[in-house]
Image (cartoon, rainbow, N blue to C red; front, side, top):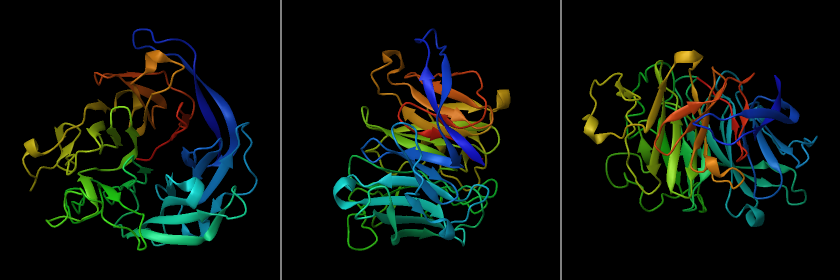
Amino acid sequence: MKRPLLLLALLSSLIVQSQSFVLEEFASGLTSPVEITNANDSRLFVVQQNGIIKIIQPNGTVNAADFLNISSKVTFNGERGLLGLAFHPQYLTNGYFFVYYNNTAGNIIVARYSVNSTNPNTADPNSEKIILNIPKPFDNHNGGSIHFAPDGNLWIVTGDGGSSGDPNNNAQNKNSLLGKLLRLDINSTGPYNIPAGNPFVGINGADEIWSYGLRNAWKFSFDLITGNAMIADVGQGLFEEINRMPITQAGINYGWRCYEGNNTYNATGCAASSTMTFPVAVYDHSGNKCSITGGYVYRGTQNPGLQGKYFFADYCSSQIGMMDANNSISWTTPFTGNNFQLSDKTILTNFM
């Protein structure tokens, strides 16, 4: 499906948690966009689920040539496809960027690519270096959000592996890389190194894991003013959740499949709830809501009344949500369609 890129524009100042927005078309002709980011220049890079990355110029023109096309390597159906993109902090000098996709076997792949040495608007499709290859038991719950943190490491969210209710208990299994937030040092000659401070080095648990107990965190981000990680985790059938924790705090158990939001889901064999970290905010599925898409904390200057608010969206209701510093949530009225573009250049679209 060809979809437009929509920009979110502020129409009025904050009035008792009521905010007026409009969506303005910025670019069109995109196919299943799931992520948008930049490389610290004026271009926007749009990740299409079909395995193609497109470049949008500052005037809204979409480059005819693909930045990267790895569609032959990608399984594109349902929740699977090319899902994430992150540029190395030294991209302007080393040309490295990283992608997250499902390969033709359905496995989760994190891979490094290089920009074309003679054309900054195209990448070298033959430069792939596989960082991770994680088998998955089911088609859904792939996660896919990747970012570099201020510590220079690559942070990766994986889904619990799929089906319903995490039947393999992957999210609570510290020896599985599914249902986790991973932290990797990719500045190495091998695929990666384990950064100092990862909590399960030398004890029970995979060395790559930073935190666990996530179901299908669809988009996470860093609020660099407060030093927090903001994780939006899609619920099973009743509740959607927002998690906020300092990026310096390791070994957190976010509770899935023992808990969905703050409510017990399946506590069989689970540790005590006192060992888990519960979300700072949840919402139920009233008003046609069904699935959270994470966004960003606003740190711009054009609208001081929005400072510190966390923006996100719900896939089914087509509404944008705003979480205040006191963790209360307010909603816009529904928009047509379910692709949103917030002020920090991140498409909000989602999977169940």
